[in-house]
Image 1 (cartoon, rainbow, N blue to C red):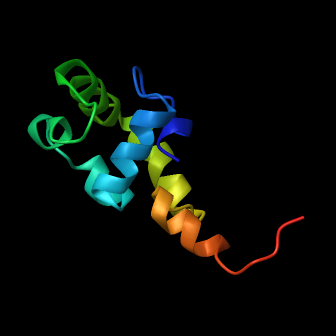
Image 2: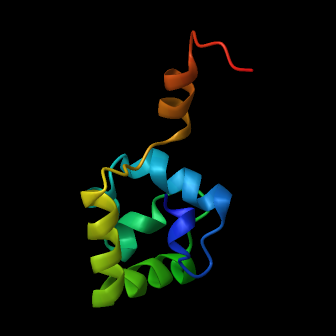
Length: 89
């Protein structure tokens, strides 16, 4: 979900690290620059870009609409657990 938001400088791999670190969109959305930089592969420029993204009202509204649609932030481990024991064709 994080990658799909189109945050500048946040690619698929970084989005995965962020999802695994924060675990929920609420925690990710309210993270400070310092908290974001604690995530693997997130430096000052990426952290600032994320904070800037959430400083824009339209972006916060988009995330709220996604939350209302029951889209959740899941890390790699959660996705793996959901598929465990299922037969895929």
